[in-house]
Image (cartoon, rainbow, N blue to C red; front, side, top):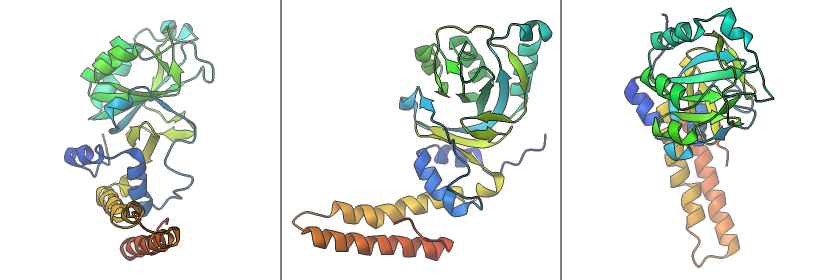
Length: 252
């Protein structure tokens, strides 16, 4: 298996400490892609376990069609074969699921049993354009889910194909893509963007805190004009700091 994984597990743990917008702020300094149209989901997601915070992991992918019972008879060993694919990929892993019934939801791939099985295989959560159920039990398993909605039943949820590109929430995810996700959505991080990402996230956060945020909080007893002048100076300093480090303009 030829995997391009420039980050250590310790790097992933540190990136997991930041929310997705903070990761984006650093990512847009190191990416060569257009940060206005690349990388993150274009359609709304719903985080059903926001209290669990962010998750980060490498994509394993699967396609399902819960409305179609024929997939079970076409490949009775589908679950066993799919689980061995998941087990063969080093973790941490995020399972990205394309539901062919979309936009209709007929049944949920995820519930208490499936989330516990995937947790045992090194998966930390899922991004599915279909549904989940057993939210409390999934949370208890330590398995985070970004999904389109909740659902009562599972119908004929069965792996149709796996280890393939899957379109979800307006973005195509490929096997072994590195994904950071939380209640804001998800961001796909290319291998060449990863080595300098953590430093960029730290720098951008410190730059915000030391300039525009500090100026915005220092308003006691000051006139509106004085506050605006202070914010102007802070914004200019923020932009100079970004340009000096990354040769790009700051957003303020």
